[in-house]
Image (cartoon, rainbow, N blue to C red):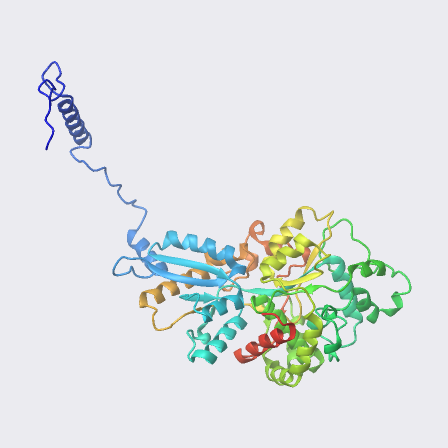
Amino acid sequence: MTPTRKRDEPRSKKTTLGLTLRDIAISSGLLALFAAFFVRGGRFVPDIPKPSRLVDMKVVIEASSETCGPAPPDEHPVIVEMLYSNDKQAWIDEAATRFAKICPRIQIKAMAAGGIEGADSILKGEVKPTIWSPADDLVLRYLDGRWRESRGRSPFDITKQVSLARSPLVILIWEDRLEVLEAIREKNKSGEGLWVDAMCPGVPRDPQNLEEMALEDMVPGTWIDWYGSVVPTALPQEPAPAPRRVGKKSARAYIAPFPTTDEMKRWGRAKFAHPSPTRSAEGLEALYLMAYDYALPPNERPTALKERIKEALGQPPKEGVVVRGDLAEADFARAFQERRERFQRWLERCEAGAPPPSPSAPLLTDAIFDLGASRYDAVVTQEQLVFTILQHFDTHADVMAELRVVYPQPTLVNEHPVVIFDDGEITAEQRTAAEKWIGFLRGPEMQKLAVERGLRPVNPELKLRSVEDSENPFFKFRRYGVEIDAPLVEAPRLDSKFVTELVRAWRDATGRH
């Protein structure tokens, strides 16, 4: 039953003119609307600004279409999922932000992951990217081989990879350790390559009776034994300070003398660390170079390759020179198969008792600064990762021990390749959008940004020297050994089957995954 209103309850409050408050409010609103109407010249919408005569709208639209591609027919954004190596995260994140402003109809969903770790996540179906950009071609070969083993056709065409940027593998080492390492290398007549000599000093090439050795002893030898094995006359007494090599880049007012044998004794065992080969591209590359130096030592490499390297080193300095090692591919493949079992035993004797390796190069690079020389003498990393660490040292260079950047020979140059996944489900719009995004990253503006973030450009229109010094870490940190014009000598690159076999050898040797 609907309640009734009392007779004496008024329907509404009246004004002295007989109008309700509601009537007054409506009348005021109408007057305001008519006033706004006449103020705007008889229009209820604000004036739309006219395009500037200095802007050609057709040119703007065509430029946008060239960068972003045609607009999607249904006006919904095209999603491109990108899986990329975490070593270039600073560059990719900023580039994606800029791309979103230019091409709002393309959404880049970028996710960073380690090299081998990222490849394994794709194999397991945990991620399904539109495009993939690991740090190095070796990781592409790894996934390509593993995929073909288990599923047949690979989801990408490895021959159609393009490079986004370059960054060589380097060694970051404390200056006093580098002085001793250089002295050892100058005196060492064994003919071993740097990746065998430095990563596993004191470990025989063909170790015996490993089953009788304690696990904790399966580590490299000590600095004092390593130095004493090549400079034995210096051991009975303190060595005289050795002169510095001509051309060493340093602005320090004081340079410490050559380390004494007592100092070397306090260093303990040699601690040259690399990231995990089963989780990072840099770890896989270090393992690959160790296998190359072990299976095919420098004195066994083809004469034609030696002549190629000698010629490149003898030329005037020139930016971007990479000496490929393809002339040694067949010899390397044959030698590794012949010496595989001995290499695995050597690797077990060297690394089985060492602490678990860092999962990534960025973490390992930070660790040498955070933990110091007591934990790491040197670490294997990518060039662009050292600049943040060098920035910390640059402020206090006159009072702190320095870290130095070494470009080993041979090395591997990370090309940061990118491939488009074609699993039968990618749409034409997604492919076009992916290609436009890749083209944007390779354009002059984003290549300049890559240089500012420590990566070398692949766009021929841009050189390192064309980027202003204030924004260019390659010039800012040359005093720490950063090289611009020195040729980079690469090891040969074998196929995916070899890469997979190498990873298995490390797992068998160390018992790690």
